[in-house]
Length: 550
Image (cartoon, rainbow, N blue to C red; front, side):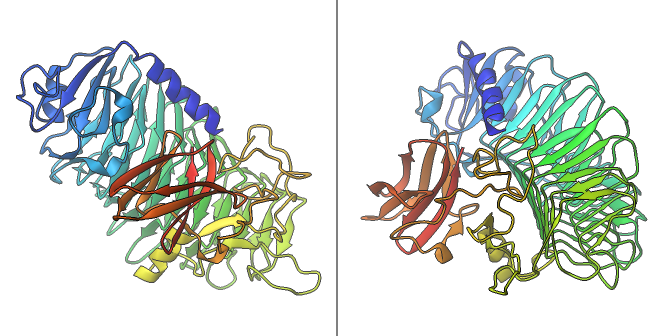
């Protein structure tokens, strides 16, 4: 699937080869924006001057504060991360934390029109927006792509989408790719609002893709409202959500019920649309006043499917219908998914409850009492694994994740937050999930880009096990951390190390443990090329990090 996302981006960029380039820098003279010396001094100035069409706008690193909402120009692609001397876009630093678009909590930060041109924003942090409608950070509409961005610390007070609100009525394509959407908030002023991180409300003819994203730490705080939903994502229309990590999101209400879907809420208004969730990790989400700690799906029409997902360590604390992992009233299709460590009070189903039929097949459920309530769903070829991650009991089957979180629900302290960042839900060689799934035609690789199947059948869950995934000499698997928020990131087939000290070095290993490169680092930032996309281990001093190069 990742090949598809890369192809789409490549096509978009190819169309801009002969684009006019404009520049933004606080040191420019703010005249015509056609060189770094004559650069516009803010994105707002560029947006008020550049016309629609095939243009690029290169924005110098820094923080740009605006008290009013910035409106995208159709066909003008914005790129962040420049130092102010570049003559080629490839020379920029693609780290999105270096170029910040910041609001003043008086309006949303960015909004898009219904565009006839494909339009891209790449390499920005969007933060501190507040909207009284939808989209505290960004309001997206037709033919727009948000790529390689961080959307954080924004708020909406109505409709939904504390971070991002997607709306489209004109047969367009909207994409959110390789983004982090975190710590956004919805504080609704009316009932039936949804989406702490992202809300999707598009028409039947729209094409919405959320791919390779981390959606974490978002919240819907219902307050005095009777109903609110979807701490991480709310899908009110068709969309594909693929290769995403949805974790540590929550829906909360001081008292009462009817606040559902800690990680995700799905309520499709049209029988002709589909919500397809694949290769996702839905982990440690929380709901204290309703059902579906990981996911809640309403009874409304529409096709809903979950394929090769982890639904793990989610939690509800309200004793109602249950579904600490998933509660669905829709006849959803669930295949090749692992349910482990989810929690619900009393005798309510901890992992999965359906009141709408559907099918559940080739899934793994841990052996907790009161784990499932399948109702009239078709159930076939599922397996049971132990509640312990590892063990040596005879005839027992273990999920055997590399490094799962040790708690259910949202992180409540810094230790648990660190545990979330370091979690690794991929399987060890002893995992019962290996070769226990079935072929799904539309899922051809796993979350890390590894082709499925590697063995005799698909593996259950978001990761496919490779025979040589155990690191070799020089790597202790118990010390490996996942480099989501570490000073290491990847871009365009390279590994980038930030903040290197004098005389430091780095060793890059491939997934088999073979040394790929041994590099002496320059002070500051270093870009290291690797042979191909995939998983790598980066060893710097006492730190050992796992990164995914896309």
